[in-house]
Length: 92
Image 1 (cartoon, rainbow, N blue to C red):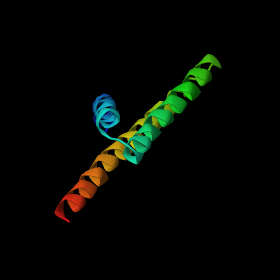
Image 2 (image 1 turned 45 degrees about the vertical axis):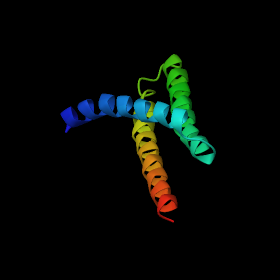
Image 3 (image 1 turned 180 degrees about the vertical axis):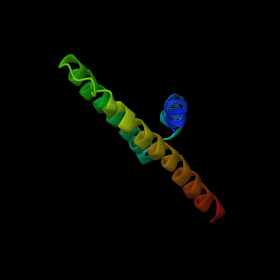
Image 4 (image 1 turned 60 degrees about the horizontal axis):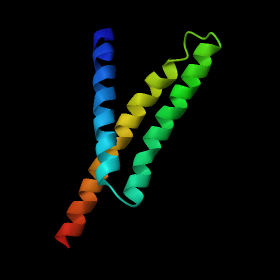
């Protein structure tokens, strides 16, 4: 199980980053606004992790570990919903 987690985290981080950049470059309007949410979430998690680390906490990076999968799911769901909305608008 630990090997799966150690493998998943870097892959999810790279996939999230690729999907995030693609979303910010290609989406427009409210879709782009929705695409900014994961960036704010990861930014807040990194800020909390840095502040916690500076305060001497060895568990501070756990916030980034918790935030990354949620942000990955959010951006994937955003792309799926955007694709479905495009298909519906195209068929009518």
